[in-house]
Image (cartoon, rainbow, N blue to C red; front, side):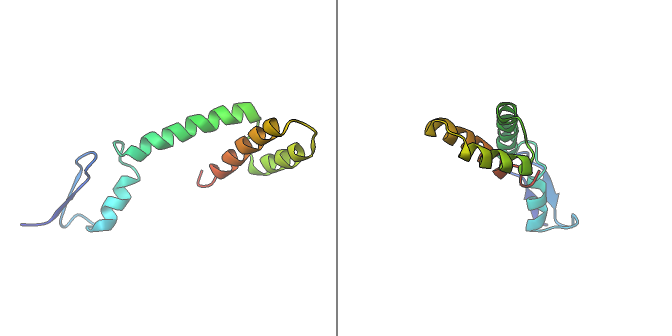
Length: 98
């Protein structure tokens, strides 16, 4: 009897002989599996990014970098500057891979 690899999230089965069979097939499947918990995390990240872009006004990493530099120079409360800089840093950090 052959060895079948099965996704624990959606039940998709890959019987022995499915090209390419082996651990890589499940790794590739996880990237597209609609029931994998990572899809929910990706959806939440996208929603948070949209909200931050609306507040900050940009999603371009170069423009965000310029905005951060400008914010650091303006006289404002430390708390307000920190909040704006944190939002910018999160947008920059979550831009990777998009």
